[in-house]
Length: 74
Image (spheres, helix red, strand yellow):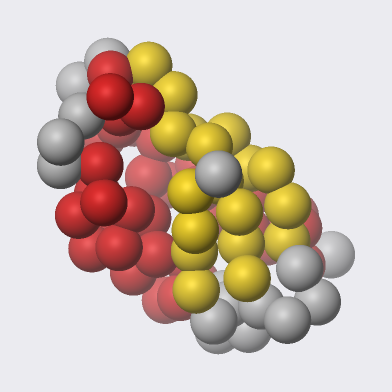
């Protein structure tokens, strides 16, 4: 259930990532509220990827899924 909510929230972020040649893959949703994602495509090697992760992906996930504590890239 929680994983599905996270996936739905990620679907809101994906179009903007894909517009820049990147994407995000959900790896794991821990019981502790930690979401693990893998940045793909142009996002994987981008110097701004940490900002994208924290200010974009994590922000949207926390807004849509309050149970989320943090998002980390693996």
